[in-house]
Length: 392
Image 1 (cartoon, rainbow, N blue to C red):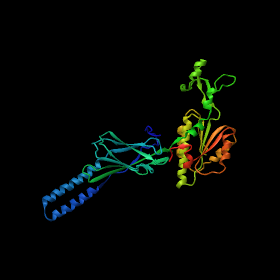
Image 2: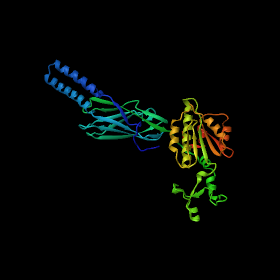
Image 3: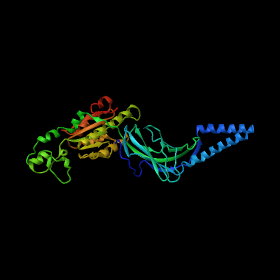
Image 4: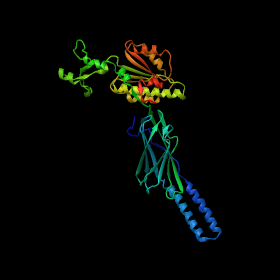
């Protein structure tokens, strides 16, 4: 998803868990200032330059006051981090922070540092926070991208809220442990025109010319029923017959599509990147099938199967499942093909292969049925471009 609406739910990013006490340390400039001031004051004291020593002591007293002010400048502040629940690998993702002031004098000169999670760009944010008045909150935003899919956990590194106010010689710092999770879906490309024609089949072009024997209803057209989508009304047939009729494309034979994601190779290296392309190709084909309102099933080789019945539903569940799928584990996609081969049907079976597999064509043919079609979509770069484009 690209820029989804931000909302908070239990267990989503943004929950504040704990807050560490404030730490105050000299900055690099402050360290030089204090050592120089101390050495100069002792030097003047040795020469009994009492007036100059008094001025040095006054400057040192200002530094002590600055220490207390820097510490107090973070008092009563809380931080929240807000993220969308889902995003897509490689997509720009908004991230927002809110600094809340429970009450008291205005807090100024604040800086927020966050290291969201591994595999993000940028890996570190440093954001200047505007002045925060008492009993109010101030928000700030930024954008990041995720290089890999999966469930990303936040909170491994604490978020820092710092202040160098008033003189810049001390740095006050408070750590906030903010935890949460974000689901990153796989990258997506676009299906080729050849694959799109294969998925659609010939029925859509032929349905308008066919007549069903006995009831004089055009094939793929039926009378309107309560709850039907008004956008599916077939106006020509409605005007000719005087009865509201709607298109019934999903009942066509041979339009059932099955997407099977094969197993990946050993973890790491080229095999891992090839499997990620296979996952991205499966997500691309899945979205295209749902958009075409095909009856499509996503088979990952587990007990759960995700099906879109041809009405545009099921897209989100399929993308979420692909975001979490592993290369190996307990997945048995070939076993799913063999189960399908025992039932007579007519379907288009797309096997997205991340590695070379033997005796695959026979199982694909059996799963597709006598009048169906089985096709291997290889995730190798050169072969994949025939079916899915736009994936590196």
